[in-house]
Each structure stands twice: as C-alpha cells, then as structure tokens.
Length: 272
Image 1: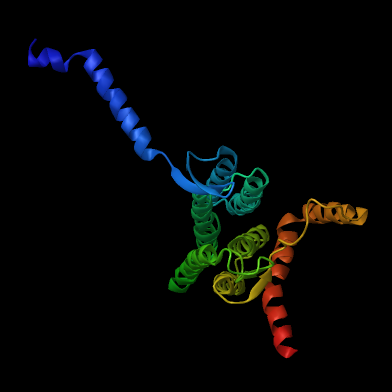
Image 2 (image 1 turned 90 degrees about the horizontal axis):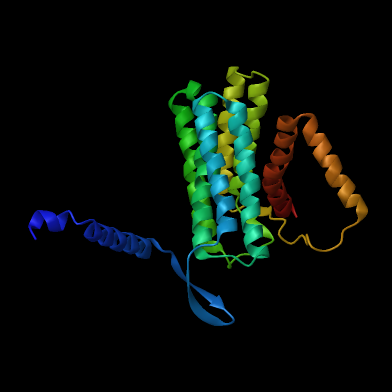
C-alpha cells in the first residue's frame, strides 16, 4: 500500500481524531481536591447549577457593557442590577445544594470583576465622565482598579474575618450605587456640569470605599430559614411596592444609604 493511500485511510483518520478528542477532554478536565467525610478526595468536573447562575451574571455584565457602548444606559444599569441578583443567588444555591467548589469561587470572582468592576466604570464613563476629559477616564479607571483590589483582598481574607462585617464597601453595592446614579440622572436628562462633578464624586468615592478599612454590615447573620414575624413579610411587600413606583430613584436611595452607613457608623464609633 502506498504512502498516499495509508494517509487517506478513513479509519486511520477517525482513530487519530478520537485520540485527539480524548486528549483534549483529559487535559481540559477540571480536577480539584475537596474534603468529604473528613477525607481528602479528588473530584472531576464542575457543578452545573451554581456555575450556570454565575455564567448568567457574567452575561448580564457583558450585556451592560454592550448596552452602554450602544448608548442604552437604562438597559445597561438594569443589567448590572440583574447581575447583582444572580451573584447573590449562585453562592446561596451552592451552599444549599452542597455544591461549593474552588472552581466556582474563582469563576464567581472573575464574573464579579466584569459585572461590578469593568461594567459600572464603563457605563459611567460612556454616559457622562468622558465629557470631563482626562479626569473622567482616570476616575473611571480608579473605580475599576479598586474593584479588582477589593475582590483580591476579599478572596485572601475568606475565613479570617468576622462574617458579620465586610471590610470595605462590597463591589456589588458599589456597582449598584453607580448604576442607580446613571439610571436616575439619565432618566432626568441631567447633563449639566454640576451632575458631571457629582458623578465624578460618586464613582471615585465608591472606588475608594471599596479598598478602605471601613466596616459594612454583611447581613449574613440573618436566619432566612427560621420563622419571622408576619409584619416582616408585609414590610418586604411594601418595599417592593415603593421600589416599583420609581425604581431608579428608590434603588439609588436604598444603596446610597447603605454606602453612607459605613462612614457614618465609623465616625460614631470614633466619637464614642
């Protein structure tokens, strides 16, 4: 048999293709060590449900970037809030279903960097900060850099700090106050120079607070499984009704209050 006929043998090509596919699958497989029943075991593959929620949050962050580039700042701001909801769900779902993993934690952190770091900074810049010149993109970059530093610090502090408190403003809350500001001011066509200075302050302050040592209440000590008074359910329903009246304004007031709570409480503690 000639060399050409051997190279053109379909069975040879099929076997080579199968070998390449198996090699690719073997090298791309996620393998990590985990503790199960007090013993260290090697586990292959990833958990679908929590990582699917993380992927959805990543998509929302990317959609916010695309919407901002296209000039649809309302949709961009809403997408950041959707990413915030999905980011809150993936970790809770992983804990409830006992599907936590190191891969999921790293994937979640990378998703947060886009959704709560790059996306809010780009949305604010393309809407109004670009009108301020170099100062605008410097402040936008400051926010993005602080978000990256905040996420890196959070990852290395896991297990070594009190879960009741966040050290520094959480990146989802920082992204929420920036997105709510863009959503609110854009709806009111606020393009005066004073609003440009206000957005510079909001974006810059949110970035600095993320890397500060100011403590923020984490709400992680609230027992969601236990019974609560009936009035609590009424308060939650009332909250949804109030937010639905003017979502952008109410969300700005809500997260603006949370962002301000850290410095206010820190000041009160010093005064005592």
